[in-house]
Image (cartoon, rainbow, N blue to C red; front, side):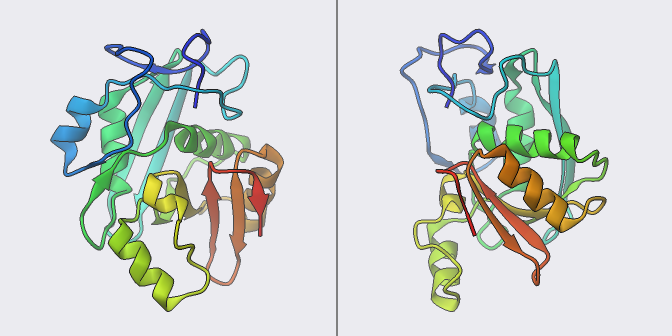
Length: 199
């Protein structure tokens, strides 16, 4: 989470008081767009001292077939409409629930994609998960955390079609921006912006 006094920290416009911080699940795009104008707060290793002029993402949800290509940050300012489109594509495909996605996760994805020279859309296996979906998956598999960062919009299971899975895994480990898990047999890497750890 970015320091609101840091001139390099992305901010959403129009700007609300620095103390405002939401983490609510939104029922649909309209609510997300209307409520998205909230500044980020707290320090973040995900943002370089001199951020690029613009950050973009291309995402493909493998469950729904939906694709989005957006520039979500320009000159350190986050675009609420782009964030809403990303949140829609990363929604819980089982329940249809849409939730805010942590901007640091999007910044990490964009930076990894750029570092690996990927031009294809990030293949999304799992983005946001509702508590109901996460509980169901946790019952079926020991590999699903009961307090998963997926439920907080802070995690994604993904792959890059034009970069080796192990290259994505290695680049994420080197970034040291959160949790990184390699699921080679299933064909994806787990990324989250929680505490740095790996498996």
